[in-house]
Amino acid sequence: MKIAVYPGSFDPMTNGHSDLISRSCHIFDRVLVAVLCNTEKAPLFTVDERIEMIRSAFDGERKVTVKAFSGLLVDFLRAEGTNIVVRGLRVVSDFEYEFQMALMNRHLDPEVETVFLTPKEELSYLSSRLVKEVHRLGGDVSGLVPPMVREALVRKLPRGASTG
Ligand code: PNS
Image (cartoon, rainbow, N blue to C red; front, side, top):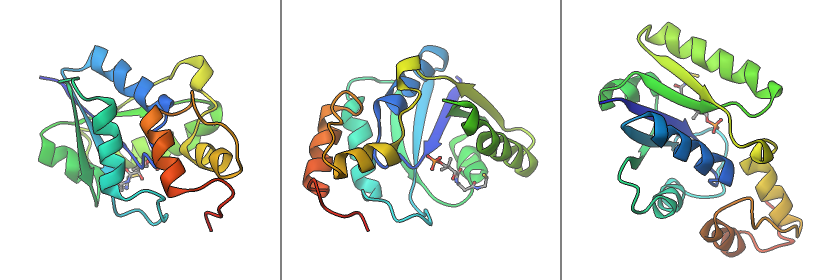
């Protein structure tokens, strides 16, 4: 049983994230989406809201489970009985950060393997940060996030409001 952990902030989940989750389902027996809760960044959505969005997007996909995690990723992996991390690589600028994280995780636990997947080409410019910015400034984010994420953005962040 190959279990992949796909960790991230998912604040909020975008179509890029869901593309990666779907791709992971084709490779692994189970995909555990791990939503970071003790982030130093102040997330727009609570961890429960972020988890709920991912769960409802993958409702009916029995391979996908979603959990919160805090602390070191390697400790979470051990607790879940796996050593596989999936991360997305969109553009060259992602590489440095992702490479550092992969090697740090391997330093902390030599058993850990990070598998990089690339999203659909047309989603490679997408990020949660840009989605929030575009929505806040009145741009249309449909097509970039699942419909219920767009609705959650409208509720949480009325257009024209400041994110601080
Ligand atoms: O979506 P993000 O914000 O790029 O995800 C980053 C994440 C959650 C994968 C990363 O911050 C993480 O793994 N945090 C857990 C803390 C940790 O294990 N740090 C040391 C290894 S980099």
